Length: 134
Image (tube, rainbow, N blue to C red; front, side, top):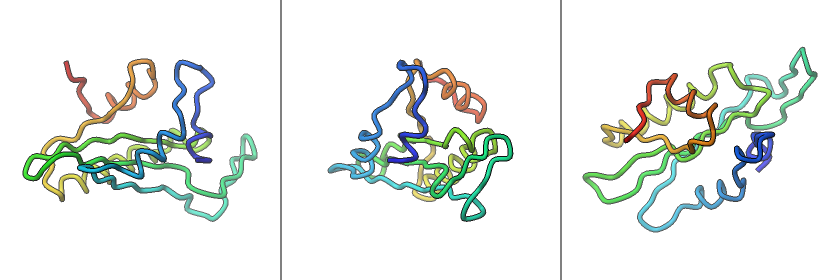
């Protein structure tokens, strides 16, 4: 919850409900959720510019597998990186790990779920090679 709250946008249109993350991670019938956290290399990371201190996870990715074998749908439902840890490759590494895991489970496609009202998220997904569905 701390990571989710720290990732909230200053723009009200870009907000999400951190409680939605907990609901997603609990899963529901017919869906499996695989999630990974990114931790700082050191127990505490200090930012030279702002003196920020991280005492916990700095990123999270959640891969949802829904539907029946042999054709389940794989999607990245949550991708969070603490604002003080952004632009360091953490999100890219988390996505690569989730996609590799999905492929090990038989995925040929992995969807990224985001909202059009989150331009930074759309830019990130484009940068890592995702295509927008029409």
